[in-house]
Amino acid sequence: MSTKKIRIKLKSYDHSLLDQVVANIVDMATKSGCKISGPIPLPTDREVVTIIRAPHKYKDSREQFESRTHKRIIDVYAPNAKAVDTLLKMNLPAGVGIDVEL
Image (cartoon, rainbow, N blue to C red; front, side, top):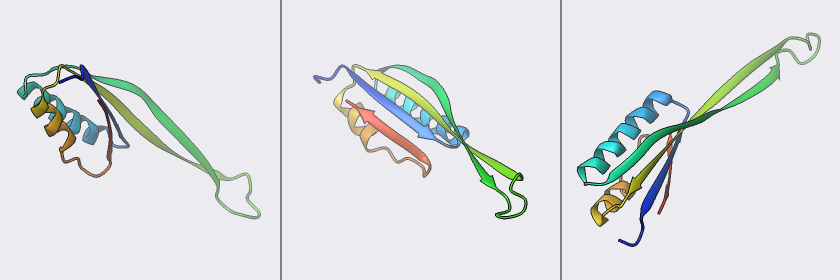
């Protein structure tokens, strides 16, 4: 295969679900005989939204909500055709985003 590395980027709001998917990917890659680097945890994105509780009289009363996006990177070195096929056709649970770079 002409590619030397596959980079897999994963994102999720739920860190436990993300860790399960990462464990499945690492298991599949090692069973197919590839060398892997990772999972490397990236900094968590934190988004805070402030909303006014009451629209008129109590304007100083506010609520804050936050959402966190957890990210991981896995590098697969020297992949064979079987490994690439299984990684691209893998079923992921809802709530986990994947980006595969060949």
